[in-house]
Length: 121
View 1 (spheres, rainbow, N blue to C red):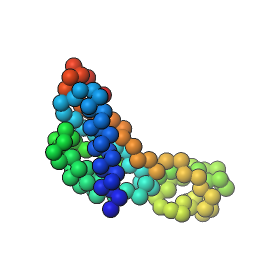
View 2: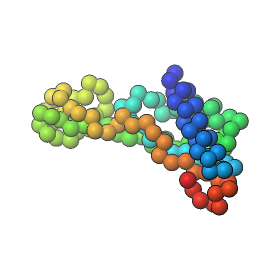
View 3: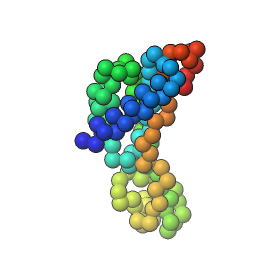
View 4: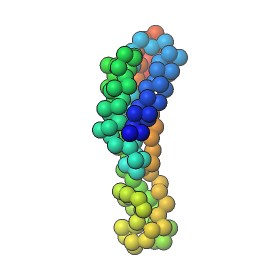
């Protein structure tokens, strides 16, 4: 289950940023997860909650934002929705589709409280 190593990395990044800001708590972590990123959202949520135990992130809300898969067909020049690999154009049925969205896996934001005078980082 690679979701645990992803969750641990997310927690480590959040803790590092909180330390830099002198935070007392981390309220929310928003993570963008592409539909084509081979990450199971519910597994990632479970792993984040487990990895957060005993840290400043323990009471944080984990918001996972699903980014749909999209591509551009090189044959018919259409933008198409992609749900799986190999990516096939739903217009011309060609397989020459360049993925343009849906492979993301990144932290969108970390909301913290502490010595930052109420600002969100």
